[in-house]
Structure formats: structure tokens, C-alpha cells
Image 1 (cartoon, rainbow, N blue to C red):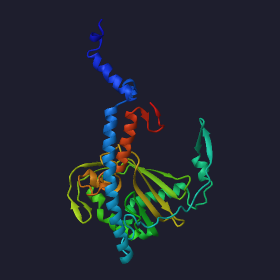
Image 2: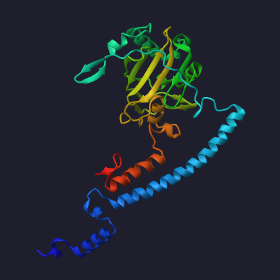
Image 3: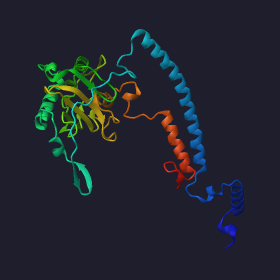
Image 4: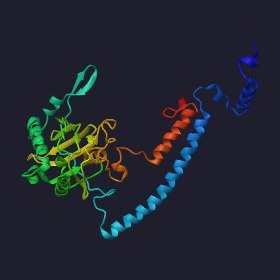
Length: 316
């Protein structure tokens, strides 16, 4: 069969191949991992994104410097954004004990907890945690926050906090979650941390229907009858020797794919699911990549399109 039939316009193919060879680019034609057009596109867009980031960083840096000067002059800005108060250091720890399970060196939880010097045992500690939750951290009618939360209490969420006991009780009590979501079920399960024996972890996959009024930031959000399905969240209560909670951590998403809150936890999850998210990127979804990160991703894709593994810098 004539070559012209086997490969239409073969003369053009050979001409292009020759040009690539002259330019030392013939590997682009022969290497199936090569995508020169995609590489060029990723390189151009990464350059644009880095330019945006550079301009943004310069403007942001100048304005933040002005903010810092005002804070120094006026004493403003305490426990906000970039100037959060320090949180409590770890107070108790155990010596880890390991066991060989199928060739894997696993932590022996029971043996590790047996080395604990914390005066309250795991079962009693979990019971205390459940009482604190049942009392809604002291905000439930008839409950006393001071009887459950220590004087040096801190609330620490991924974005919000640390908040003092007074700040937390005032804020959490104002949400009236049980009134807004009467069928709220946390679906929590509990465990004492074997390496930090005064901490009770509780993991939840909360669901609720918005049939009441949700209060937030001075707003009254009327019932939407939407269902809130939170992702699995890791939360914890840390107790002092007197059995009071000195730290509460909530809202740490474990799998952003689950639920309808785009990975948000805590109260942010409820606001997102009912269609009233906070008008900031932290209130929209768990993770919003920066322009710089996207640019770096595209540079990695550029390397892949040229036939290189960006992780190893070797040819694909």
C-alpha cells in the first residue's frame, strides 16, 4: 500500500518531525506523555496567577503594616485574626506502650492509659463529658456554666477562638440551636485520649432539620426546613483535676466530602446548610486554595505535560 494512503499528508508529518528535531524537540512527538500545548497553557496561567499574587501581597503587606501601627498606637486588635491569644499547653501526658499487631507497631491504648497519673479515670471522665454536653456547656436553662467550665476555660475552633468562658457562654447561648433544630442529633461516640488522659474525644456526624429560628450575629434566620448534614467532626473536652472543662475544641472536619456543608463544622456548618453562610471565605467551605497555591499546581501540571514527574523530577 502506498505510504500516502497509510498516512495521509505524510510529507507534512515528516516536515514537522524534521523541524522538531532541528529544535531538539523531537521527543515531544515520540513521547506520549508530552502535551506541549497544555504545558504552554499551564505556564502562561501560572505566570498570570503569580503576578496577581505578587500585586496582592504587596498591597496586603503595606495595609497590614498600617494596621499594626494603629494597633500599637491604640491597643486595638487583641485576640483577632493574626493576634490570637495563646491557648493552654498540654497539662498531662502518658508514656506510650506499643503492641505488635500483624507486623504493625500499634499503640496499646489500655496499657498506655494505665500509666496515667490523672486522678479521674476514663469511664468517669466520659460520663462527665456527656453531662457537660447534656447541659449544653452550661447554657441550658437551670445549668450553671461555672460548675462545668473552669475559670480559665478556652473555646478553640478552627477559625474562632480562643474565647473565654464568658465570651463562649454568651455566644453559644445566643444561637439557641435546640430551638432552631429541635430534631438535632449529634450521633457522637467517645474515647479518652491514651496519650493525653485528661482529654475526652467525641466524634460526631450531626444531622438536623431547620424548623425553628436560628439566631446568629444579631440576625434571626427563619425556618427553612432544610436538612443539615455535617461532616464527621473531631471534638474534645479537656478536664482539670477538679473535673471542670478548661478547653473545648469543636468543628474539626475529618472528611470534607461527607454532608452538605462543604467541610464546614460547628455553627458555620448550620449557617452554610440553611443557605446563610458567612460572607467570608472561611464561612463558605473548608478549604479555598490561594492564588499562589493554584499557580504552583499549574507549574506542576506544566512539568507533567512536558513528560516529567514534578514530585521526583524524573521522566514519566
